[in-house]
Length: 239
Image (tube, rainbow, N blue to C red; front, side, top):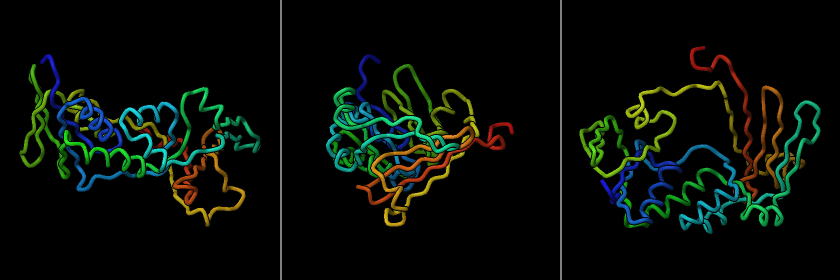
């Protein structure tokens, strides 16, 4: 194979959608296969740095992403033990000039929708949902995937974007996911339910030795994402 003209992507999350759009914009015919019954995204807030906006611009969706993102005044880290400020980074015009782009936060559903809307309108991408890939076979010239219903698709290349429990990775490398022991609890709260002194236009991270707590403003300031992260030895692989 000297020239790639077709690709199969397994997984329709943010990574899969972005990969499909990127390849299609280069003239490669894409088939995207998603296990879930509907294309969607879970989670809450995600931070977008200048490099992320550069990537979104290259996909032709940067302007839409900017419309849906919340541009912050600064980023702050606090010491959760003594309540002292560790560092505060301004993210205004000086930040943008230095790094060549903005810093913002956005809901994962919104950034996924931004990319997926462009995928849906691109003639070079086909997609199927409710498609659970169970087998992968390669030759020197192409790769074929099979789902649990016996359907198959063949293309020049295969890209696995199917998450931490990746069927593609398991098939190619054979290793199982490794549980690190990091545990995360997330909540999305309407702005009206937040205390007045926490309604700030900046992500704030409260850090301690075994636990961190962060607050991220979303969706035009109408919601806040609260995230608590800690390490649990009982959750580690082999524990």
